[in-house]
Image (cartoon, rainbow, N blue to C red; front, top):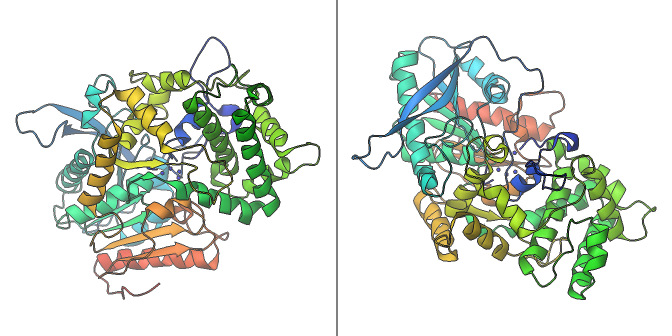
Length: 503
């Protein structure tokens, strides 16, 4: 989604990591739980103290709760922002499509898409996805109330709002429309072009998670490869030995050693496969958070330096020491029980921090019913052990939302998502898919695609959504080529010719 599906979030620093309030410091950091669902928030989150442009205007749009039931006339309002700072009469509408996160003006006001909008004299806008931020169509997030969290519903929200902007705000019903989005928001942008080519003239999408899958083992494989590339083979080997040592000790009944070393609140129950899988998965996610912190891939080498330090006698000791130090200020011990994990996701209130700030329950429901993206350790080509399967995620979906959410329901939801939108063969035009060469979400995106005025490009050595930022002196030649390519394709959708075979 930066995991919406989803997927990879400008993750908070360790000191600012939030937990669900409890009697003591033992609960799981919410940033850690959010990563279980591949959730990366908006890649360009407002820095502390950021003041939005005075030309950015806030609004609320009234939309139908259920677009597909003519007998249900219930409505709700979602947030949107617009800015006419660069708009020239007759210019296009450029829209940053909202995803699994609260609305934020920074992405609209500071990005390569904004820069292209300025060149094209475009009107800029962005929307907040239903059920996220303060755009909830329901009074609480009970399972029954989450049934309107569907991609098709969100698409109609988007299209009806765009029609409103053109007619009522811009005063130009014939304005061309260009969409941009990242991760799940990027997928929505491409699907909007696919479904409504009469309204959407083109879309540039970065790390767009267009292929749903239950078993996303490619993620952990690629994470391992990134550790080799940005860290070292020694670091990869240390992590491999640490996880396999922990698994072997648990299999041998030496839970006391593992529980003590990793400072769990209660001894790990080796007979409880879900607890074992959850423990191992959260340890891997903790490393992922550290190594991808603030989207700075150079953190991999920093973390690897600790994990391979000579002061530790074994790799497992090094891993445990690192994780204890990372979370020392926010918890006394790790409550890794499956029940505690479910209690975090089971809170149905709108203002619970895990829902209001991280969108966890909403995101979890969307993942469990339409996308999957479960980061398993079922591939032998990764260093994080072998015990984490999609059984953990299937059990979690059922425990949180009810026994109706079975394996068959989840698999059918993933299958239908791919049928409805075409997965990696959407038969689409006027969409440019961009991905980074070391972005694990490229495996559920489109990296090779050539059609009339459509294309795909992978930027070597680039990470998740690096290409959405404004051109700078830090860009590689390949990244500059990607950014210039996006500009040229957008110009072509607005009327200038371009060859679709350029790579």
